[in-house]
Image (cartoon, rainbow, N blue to C red; front, side, top):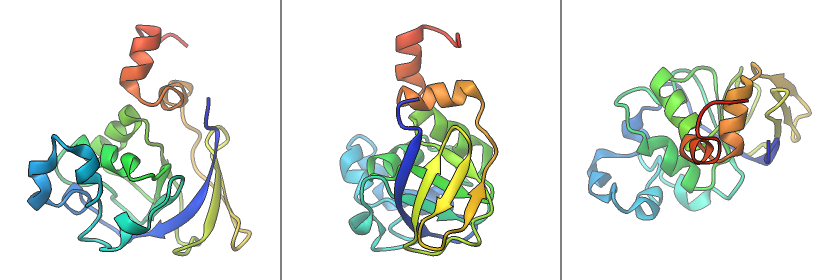
Length: 168
């Protein structure tokens, strides 16, 4: 996998961050202009998020991240904003799958010990998360090899274009 290690800053959110919070409905007219839509990602949950996030940073959330309507634009604009992964206690199934298909890792772990602004390092292969600010080390479940391969190619479409199927 190309980006096995990820390093960045934590942006902390609570429980039940819906796809409506990720992409506010009033910006649905921007679905054909994803770079512009990404400028409004999570605007209703944290008005400063889109302006403050840098390439490589992480979303750290509570339970049920990505609930609501099945907008595949939601993980895509998160990725386009520069976020390298989402760490959450639990994620809506369809959001999780859409995120992997778009090349955005979602790691399920206990996020209580991570604070807003902490510097994190993730090893996607082992599922190890190190909080470089506090020294705390967490684990998430290991991702199946096929998911790591899809993420390594940048998403499902680039993976299929390269391999034509799911051979591992």
